[in-house]
Length: 184
Image (cartoon, rainbow, N blue to C red; front, top):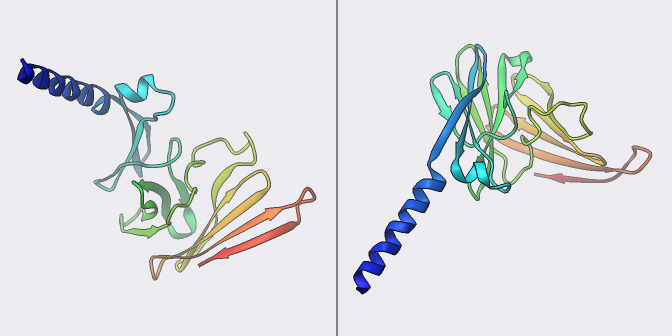
């Protein structure tokens, strides 16, 4: 009898795991000449307000899971013929990906626990929250997150493939910097 109870509990747990975690529905959320964006939903993500679908990008034959933002999930960087997108990496943080759309060559830059990327794809007129590329050249991409009263600027070094620094500015009601922090 005890064995039957243990087996029943294990079967129940297995059914729950399969039901709630495996993708049950996915669709192509965006497609252009550079990328295919896919959103995957599990039963859990469909019924829980605290769960989101998993976003994936297919670029140059490679699949990138856990992509942040909304379709198209990337920012164009025409100055260097590339796109920038961000993936979440479990507990360790996030990664900036810069992919050349001619060669499909990729540069990945670890961004620690940055919040950049969640605003990609959102309409820029909805509020003061936005993620965008301010400037770029063959050495550095400057990515920016704006908030209602603050701004984060990320200096992505393409040569060393590192985040050189992040500058966080807070503004007063008049738009003047009241506090600046630089993280290296």
